Length: 47
Length: 336
Image 1 (cartoon, rainbow over the protein chains, first blue to last red):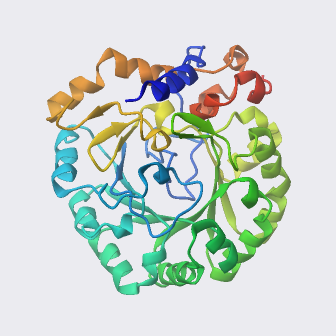
Image 2: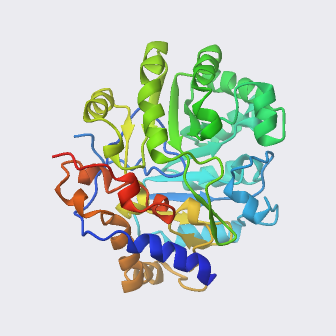
């Protein structure tokens, strides 16, 4: 992997500074998953 | 767990913003049967509920119907520009192979726009494809990416949805892309601008009767809380990506595992090199460096997020934004 890319990504990740609990996210049942959204059944909710 | 299979990089369009440019849409970058079977083998001990087939343009892969059949009984979805689905026989073949649903990526709503954005005047084929999807009563949604030009033609997009009888639209938000090791922001509006346009256009979309789902992978505090409540109450909001939840696997045509479709040059590991069996793959996913990568992606970008009531639904949004911005530029204030 090229080091420029690795450094860029690592630097963006380094900005995630605060520990977080597991994420849930809102999930709509009206659409289909696309390039990014997980659309995984079971552990997403809209509460 | 959801698994994305990037089955190829070849495409029949040439969209200016596409990440496949970096690979020059190479027809050589096509997933072979060997790699496909190897992916199924190494992931066999993981419960994968959905496979999402993407590209390039997956309908150009000659083995696509056979791949779909092979992936059953999991749910199989296709992300496509739909050009090839103007051929009803081909669409029926995919349906009969077990395809469950599709996301159609829309590139323009007039033939002129379509040609300008993709290099091809294929909107008429997409419209035929949508008519075919309606005729076969297939599950699909139309995906539109909020970029600088698209934000300003939303009324036209809505008119197109109504004229083609497409019922569900999803809005995705443009993010920085990495080209030759540099962050490119061409055509990518500022997150605050995209959030503002989202709110401004909402009533017009609601009044049209088109259901629009917002894949809002930016900090939620860019939106008013009343607006978030409205979207949630109408089941129109999606947040948090697979990377933040560590519940997705994304494989490239050559068997490389990547953390995100936008980071296709950031290889976490490769089939045949870093893992060769289901046991290897489990050990690989448990490696400290891999676990740390996903742990950091889940973390919050700003100390203020810690007190936010919506932090589990947001997580600060897609971390790709932070290639360009610091949290002080896009995190507004916590919801308390």
